[in-house]
Image (cartoon, rainbow, N blue to C red; front, side, top):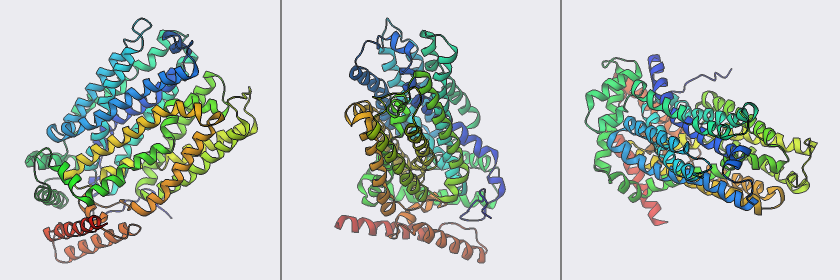
Length: 551
């Protein structure tokens, strides 16, 4: 019988390592994702409220004018997130992961507060400005949170803990999807009705800012890299719930020491050294391009078109009425959140990264093609009915089926892969590029979606064909380029990516690690990565670099 809670370890690990403290650190850091999820979800349905349209004179706008304004409101936030993700690097590199997260929460709160100043007299200016500022905080947090969690997580539950970030995102999104349905049902159409969803942003932002000083400990890896060894050991002992004399702590500290020293030798010191290493070494640049492009494929599934413009999406399928559209959006949020929990606790560390991406892409593509076929044949947005016909119900089924495939695959897996695929010396830089890639493609899709629905066929059937085709194209990309990273220690990622056999790379490296542990145990030694092994990885990586240069 399959044990869904089985942990596959690279070495014997004390049970104390899997304690509440490491989960508390990860969950508190993941509050950043609740901010992100809420901001991504509530804005589209807020713009659909009659009270919002009346407040800002949008009821007299043409469809194209309203589409442009909606795209501007959404994309200013994405622009802020893009530049904020770049800001995350100096924050985390100079001031630490913990302080960087705290600063990002305060910037977000400032932006959320500015939005509340918007009204009929001031117009949309405070919303535009506030969303840019809030986006700066969100972008920085999206850079730092997966990085921090990956650095404190034991290898066997690293995917699960980074998955907390995705869980937070979905919880925030769930609240964001449902809150506008709630205000339409219980609050009369007024400024108060649309202002409440904007004000609720302050709750997750405030909880995030207040939780960091109490629950988040600075990353031991970052502290050792800054020669703050005693503090690093104290934090590691706290997070692992073990004493400094425990063999596991001794082994892990030595691994970090060796990796940090190797990184200093190979990469150098200084603010720009990691950039030079990543951009100057073809094997690292290739790896970064492969992992960061996962966000292009993720956005190509159509997720952010749905997140930001759900009323438009459901109208294209034939759902009529603001209240019904908001209710349908809320159900979408529930399915996505529940299955994100399944992904985090039962899927990501059990079935790996690559396999679930392939299944999600295949199932999602079929679902999108089914919706496209219905919209092309029936044109439901231009032929609305009071009750969904059987074909419309089938289209809704395929929409929710697409949601299920997406939630257990592409939803959070790209963040996990990017957070765990690089050596510590360059991980902050690569995570910076990962977050930047996410927000870049997020911006592209969110800015283009309203125009796509106006121009890509009746009822937007061409939009669904586009998203389905993108998912089909992602399948050979995953098969040919992405190795399975599950259970591989962070210090061994170079060895994994140096394997020429991408499909079997994970099994090859895990078998090597177990053999090395067995040999060390037979000799009565702790399992420490020797310098020779690191040199072997460097030589393997250099070999790949030479071959890449010849191509």
